[in-house]
Amino acid sequence: MKTIILSVFVFVVKQCDVTNVEPSMRNLINDHQDAQVIPTGSLSGVSQRKKRQVLKDDVGLNTTWRDGVFYTFKTQDYKVRKFFKMGAKAWSKVSCIDFHEDDKAKHKVVVIKGNECASNVGRLSGDQFLCFDDKVDLGTATHEIGHVLGFFHTQQRYDRDGFVTINTRNINPDDIQDFNIVSKSLSTVYGLSYDYGSIMHYEELSSPANHRPTIIAKNEMYQKTMGSDLLAFSDIYTINVHYGCNKKCSKSTSARCTNGGFPHPRDCSICICPGGYGGALCDQRPPGCGSYLTATPAEKSLVVNLGYGTDLRDEFDFCNCMINAPERKKIVVRIRSISEGYDNAGCTYGGVEVKAQTDQKMTGYRFCSKLGSKYTFVSNSNKLPVIVFNRLGTIQVVFTYHTIN
Image (cartoon, rainbow, N blue to C red; front, side, top):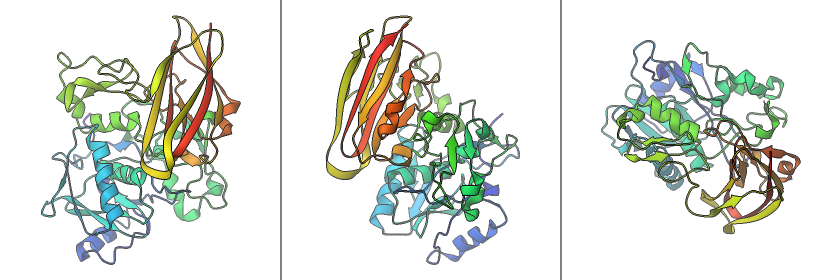
């Protein structure tokens, strides 16, 4: 079945100051007051956002941006304009979706500055607003543009109860609708597993009423993975299927991708790869910082220093290590230490990801504090990616690795 977003029935808003926008914008907001309301919420730390999964086209509504996303700015705020463009680029470079600044377009996103972050889900008819506040950063912008493209919050997936526990007693009553399930009859997940690392997933302390966790991962090793500021491979895959980008590459002439990757719709000779994998066919580690490591029965140790200076940067740096072992051997990894000052929900400043999970298309286990040292990670094959990521000063991560039968 062809799938698109039924965004006419869903509206995302939370206290966005629209007093300076045109009357038609205010009417649009009022027109949706009786719709299902899904606030973006205020997350702890610097980030505010979250969403995922898309709705089915069971009533013939065309709410995807088939000719690209058209937008205009109704603000001169430097940060708002900068991060919207960066977020748009993040989605565009891994899909076939183009963004066009055009204040004359019939259907367009009007980017404004307000008191909170807010967005419609999918394309509406005419103008629709996208609101950012003073705390906007790249993760927030990328997330909110995910709403524009059609994502619901990951924790609203119809199958979420098998993966997370929602502590409703800890949720601010004004935000409880953030955690409502979107039914299977309305939504589709394109056969993908639940990804705790989706940029559309709330963090553990989202919308708290009492400073206690509102979301608990049923696999505790994913607790800090929730609330990521990084675009996940599952997000990228979903948007490419949802917009038909995957149909631009012929199976007979396109790259034969490995490890769950798929041909890039802008260049079918290369692949878009899951995290930790790179090369034209996803059969190598990504270029840049990192190395190939060979595991043996004897434990080895690696120290990774990543970053520079002391400032918080807009974008992450990465160091990708690929641990290999002989056939029929598995790899054991232990995190020995992580620099102090990075511990926060979602590890939005820096940390380490160990991809020891079965489905390599999904995000691995992320940690940004000594909490990671309590776990032993065992690979499901004879290779295991370990990814250090950072955007604050210089982080040091120490881990050990060895083989078992």
